[in-house]
Length: 351
Image (cartoon, rainbow, N blue to C red; front, side, top):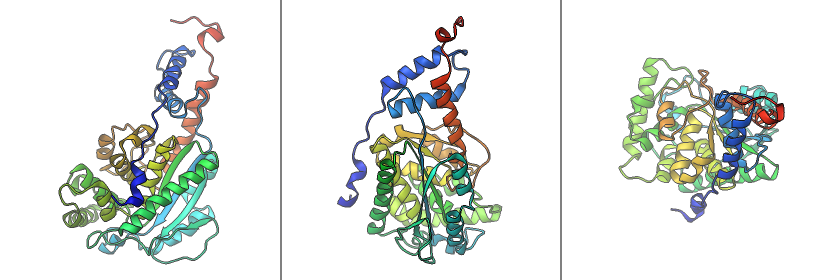
């Protein structure tokens, strides 16, 4: 392993099991039948254990929005041209994208990154330019990244987490935008899980059956080129991933190492989560999974991660929108946990 990325194997702190157990006991004393608030109870207990407190909260929520292009788009695996990536970068920064509107609605902070859209847009207000290249390499023909680009992407994610913590963040969300990025996410998941492309390839932004078959064929070509038996996870990330996936994996690892709870979005961010957990298994304890993506391959990643996402709304946009949808539910779970009366406080008889 390159010395510059050795930090990814630094240990993660343990979850505060005493705080989680105390939260569980409190839930059993609240004026309701035990377990009757279902997974809202689970959310509060998990956050108590992660934050080591009896008064959990997801706020402030920090979103890291990583925008970059992918060379594999040249293989015709998307309905949209790559120029859309830079157009959407402007749209996100202006507040017109779904992720932007939802971030404002739920009161989340968002840091937007240009990691490498094909056309350099120059300075954009509200966008942090951290360009690693004019998009990643075409994984059907070459590695996605050089070793230097991979190390820089991981480090960018880590540095963003440090800034978020300095600003008091208590929950991390990563998002992405970049034409064609479901293809590297699919290729990575196939390589890490030992599954065939047909099992994971999906419509992405709206491909028909023929388009999905073409995507699966492109993924198969990339796997034949890069996924040699026994190849290490970090090398698979370098060869099959992209700037956005690598930066998110770095952010996930850094967040877990610093004890910052993570709310994982959908298909593409789950591939980054899978990479992060393979690189550093301790990261898994610090993850909550927001929603079940409409992408058919997502369930395979969730099974591999032992995850049961909270929501199933048919979402497949990405951009962190599924995770943003979860934020109000997390707030409700925490408020109920803290403010609801116990049987003793309310003078209500327990059954």
